[in-house]
Picture 1 (tube, rainbow, N blue to C red):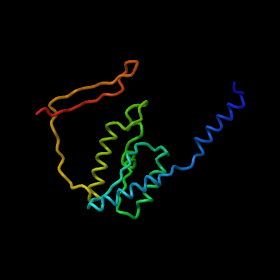
Picture 2: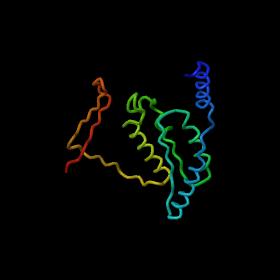
Picture 3: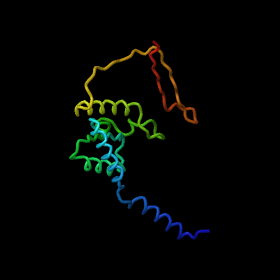
Picture 4: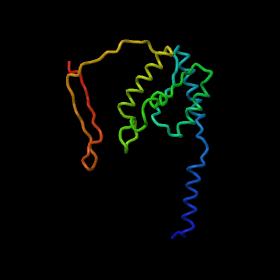
Length: 161
């Protein structure tokens, strides 16, 4: 059995690990992106790196900083979608549910719009007219939590031609 003092030591060690960590080192990953850039350019292509960030969480900061620093003077285009997503919406508006912090349909729609605008502006995508399909069939799927409360509703549209 542990003594009460050892529990405090374990807790303080955990706090030390959580709050006094050094910034993550992405250098190996960034080298791989640089290698990918060379391969893409050797085949006449252009490389863009997109970070799908939908929160202000500080864990993203080192990645964004290292990416932008590493590719600042290169042909690699870097887009942090967090700037687009969080400019007009709160984090809570961009998640599936309080218990599921993944990006929701609004976040994905805004990300697609931001990505399209970025790629078009950088000359990586030609502007094309928007095509809208009329929904012929609609499937409604509702997800409920254990108490039976609806927390997610997904509508699937299919063109049945």
